[in-house]
Image (cartoon, rainbow, N blue to C red):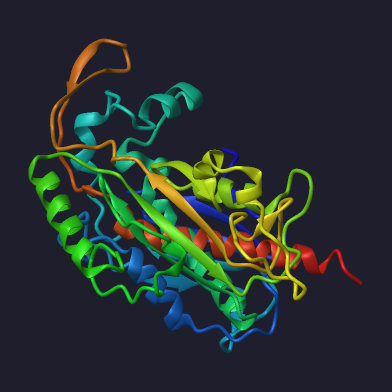
Length: 355
């Protein structure tokens, strides 16, 4: 199976299934002699961990990362960093009811048709549990970026029809003081109540994660097919349940005239406005990068649904299991991780283009 790696110079390859023995990864291209804060890595994983509140899946996993290589005496050695996260709360029998049937809007059908065989235990490789490995790599990339003065912060800006209005780039960096990870306390309370109501209905709801990156130097990204926003888009769209990505003015830009949308460059190199979202011609221009990531309602609902089995016969898919009624609260650290992986990869690639 190809498609399990991301990055060129800073490269992550992940492995494992949702209810297998473990998930994990190999991170290659890590610069040597950098002191890592392993506690900070675990904190990032804990932000994604299931069972952390009453509005996410109640699967119980400690998600403790165990590093196998590439780190000695607290510092990176320059060799590949290998790591594993044990699956402690495996319940493969919980998925025996979908062994021969396809859940609507899931990867069951496409995986089975492509490979002729599938791991039905929690979705196997297609499960969002795989993203824990991405958070490990992202947490490491974050520490390098922070050393360079680059900060990545994301938060939930919308759940269903409940959304924050105004210029989101001006919102103070969130401290994650609530379980939905929305920086506005009043809106957060409404979102939490709505998610709880949706869960009681046995249904799910989607949402939006907004991300802002500051301190990015000029020059990250490359023409023509390695544009920074294109790689950010690919990274975000590789996350489970993501249905949309827009950066800068995004789709709202179509309603503006060029005279309104153009970012006037000042004598110090900054721009008066930032409709470009910090990227022009696929290359960072030094302004903050900001983007939105849209997540669909999770496909697994606690309601019986019409579908078909592997014989293409009509069946009812039973709704049961442990699932998120809304994925965006746990998606925030994943979005940050994928942004960090992409940016640090481009930073290292950019260094190789200069003498």
